[in-house]
Length: 177
Ligand SMILES: Cc1cc2nc3c(=O)[nH]c(=O)nc-3n(C[C@H](O)[C@H](O)[C@H](O)COP(=O)(O)O)c2cc1C
Image 1 (cartoon, rainbow, N blue to C red):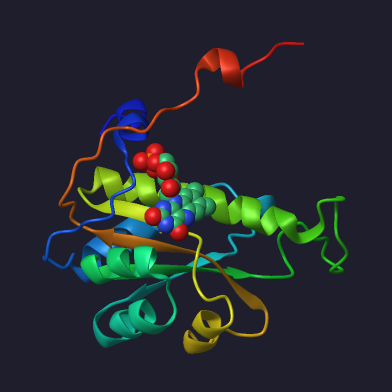
Image 2: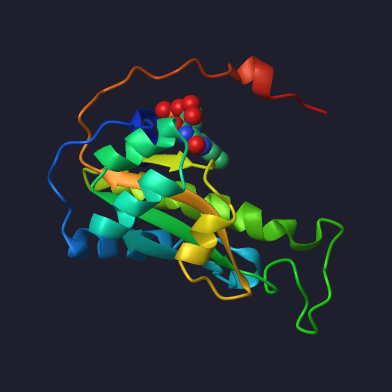
């Protein structure tokens, strides 16, 4: 798919068809997301693909109703995990800028959108979710002490085609100095 078309036609999808995407397609998308830029090429974003009983448990116990319905509909839930202590840091562990470790969330966002655009190009739909139980879910995923859960992504074949929500105009977004 042409890049600008992919950017313009990607939508957040919250209802999915029943088919489960094959693992090799999920692997293709993660392989494409690996091309995302990152702080000093630290590549601190990782992905956990969750299906079946584990996904059902997360929906039932770790999500509010709106996102639980999305995850129940989606055949795959992706947990985006960031390795801490590298992004935004010097080799000695000190922070390089005043933004300190917040650069790791910047990198996670780039990786997340790269994942979503790659999925779109591969015929799959996504919605990023930032609202979940921030205590129970990382524990359930057995994350290491130096890892944080940065976002969830529901993944599957779209069962809806929502219109594009209103987006700001160039005049609102851009100024010159
Ligand atoms: C960081 C982030 C968190 C989000 N969290 C949720 C969420 O918890 N639940 C949800 O349904 N959508 C969530 N969204 C999706 C946004 O609502 C969606 O991107 C926005 O309405 C624009 O629609 P579009 O993606 O189709 O352009 C999130 C998006 C981002 C970038």
